[in-house]
Length: 110
Image 1 (tube, rainbow, N blue to C red):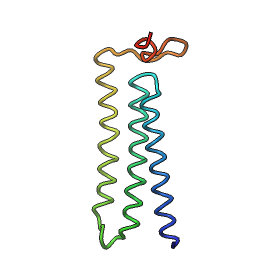
Image 2 (cartoon, rainbow, N blue to C red):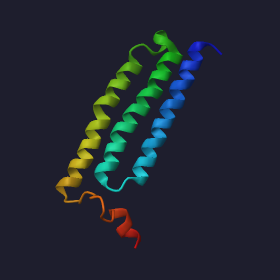
Image 3 (spheres, helix red, strand yellow):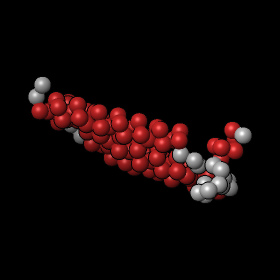
Image 4 (tube, rainbow, N blue to C red):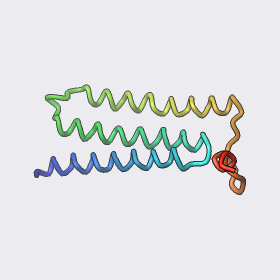
């Protein structure tokens, strides 16, 4: 195993961990606004780390400019989608979570 392989493996593991934390955040956070934050930040960073690992593994000859363009596309689209999700929730009147109150998740379970 070369140092390049170790860096690629570390990036893949780190990207998967970030995606796992984002997925747990989507399930565990109390309201749509917090969930969209976890979705936007976690998915952008996790997918970008995985794409960087792919780019390093393939090399610039095979991947060329395709992978950096895919990373730029992820940075342009995922945060916008997360923002639009929060905006739709706000416009439709979905309440946000206030500490000390029951979360919308808790109200559905009682």
